[in-house]
Length: 558
Picture 1: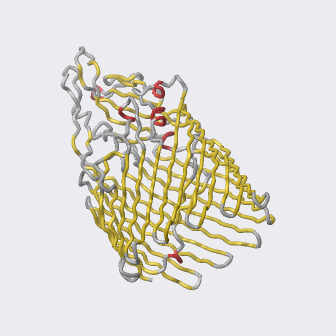
Picture 2: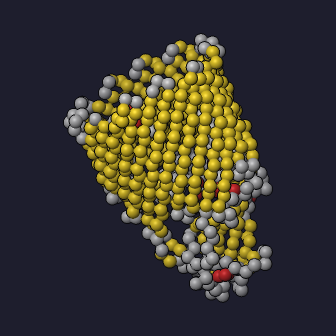
Picture 3: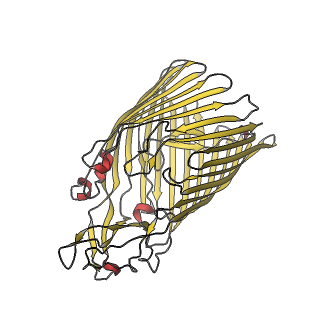
């Protein structure tokens, strides 16, 4: 796969990484890979690339993976996928067609469910609690996708069109549903004159979301958390037009001016996303650049039209006396279709230079301003001991507390990034990167949950983030048969008076040792992620991680 950096577009903030699969004419021949390691990790993949005729190639790929869901238990996780791609390429035209599908299953043995109707709460009994029963959870995720991309050059204009279809479904309680998407884009790139290139385009996306209906026996077999919706089926469209003009101002200066206008039917809004960039070539090997642009997050059903509940047990004063008890409660997070779209304006500037053939530097400083970020509003008690403010009565003496999502949060961040590449010899190279980022958030004072840590503290989630990130990669070819790679990663600690935001500094080391007798032999790799690391959490209250080792064999036949 090839990673390509790109700025702009829906959901883009400081940049976007596009994952682009290689053209099938770059992967001719057969490739087989087998890997196995700790925590029941097993992986097998096979790829066959072949020539159909002088201008057409194709590739078939199959892959299967199995491992434990977490390193600390033996719950099983399985994933299988298959894909096919064919490419037709001539001097002035090309066509690419892809089709594929996947199936993933994960097991959770530590999953509990709760029957509020079967085990009603007794407010007269201080020891009365709702006890969950161990039910386990099988999460299925499966999907299908297809993509058609074609292009043709006529005189001084290049035309491209893309159509892709994606259909997937999940049973995981926080993302349960079926999701179907059809997307199409067309663009034209015209060389107006030797100094000006104009790009014009338009696109449309059609999405259908189907969420399972709320069960009639909702209070029986309740998950610890679950996403629901009053509208089981939703349809939405996104339409956009965009243009970009790249101009060679002088021998040293190049400018790029662009704008994208996007309309979202989900909340009937239209957003303008402009950007401007300027590149100055100090010399052939040294460049300075700067730019500013606005990007918008695509409105989502997650925060606009769906609700999430979480079963919670808490101690409050009983209704009949002053003793402590644990009535059942549901914490409800409700979406709001009237929220404005999240947006960010980012300014960045940087230097990119090649000091010599073995040493280069890439540096950036940036400042971003975020508006209308999502947060939880103040908490409201809708039902107390089963008696609700609308007069309805709920079973099991149930309490319900509601948080509504709002767009009252703003933030700004600034920072710098530095990347250094050094190749002291033909067989040894280093990639060093350092990032510093500082984020501060604020919101309207009427929202207690933003300004206090006790009721959500969404502002704290932004303010208490690691500020320093360091990465050092080294690749060392000892001889024609042996290679050693290492990757050192460091993330700084987070200090806070609230335990939820505290996080220790984390330093890990990944190591890869590879051996191949010659090009006709299999490549043997031994990999250790987190070498020597004791169990740690990448973020507070997340699944623990620890050292993982595996062995991989791969073989290529042209």
